[in-house]
Amino acid sequence: QRQGAQAVLATLWPVADDATPVAAIAPNAPGTLLLRQNAESGAGFFSPKEQEILTQIVERMIDSDQPGAPRVRDTKTIVTIDALCGSLDPSVTQPLPTLLHVVDYAPFVFDLSLRRFTHRTPAEQDASLDGWMRSRFALRRQAFMALRNLSFLGYYSQEETWPLIGYGGPL
Image (cartoon, rainbow, N blue to C red; front, side, top):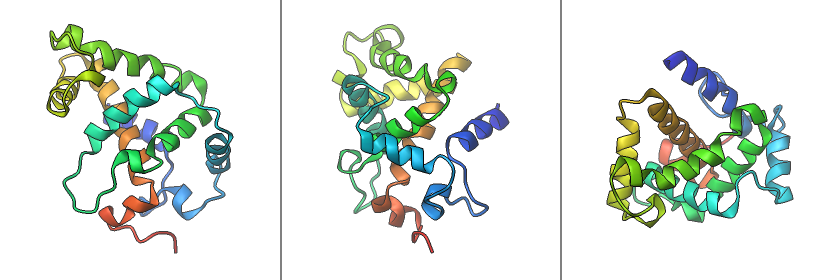
């Protein structure tokens, strides 16, 4: 499973030998231009409602107590994820919008709550995501990892977050 997840992540975000995203060190690398074009064209992969669900998921996944850490909503994290998903093979990304709706409505089934994910408190959202992470169902855990990987990829690819991880930027 770990090798499969690594292969998926490598497909989503190719990295150089030092684990620096290729787009950060080679802005003209294959796929990077397409990412920029999708982001600039305004053609979104996710609907506005799905973007809000994704934003709240990413906010909980990234929640950093680090001083000076920019808020997800103050970065282009969601735009980056949206552009990335729009640039990939549709057979890989097609389930993602549905997954976001499943996560939003999952508390009805898995948490026995009458409130959707997007209407819960941050602590309740954390508990809900923890349920996805620790689920006895492999598919649910894999969905969590996909959202987690997209969250970290989207957030830490933003220039304003680089100091948080000790990345000084392209040489």
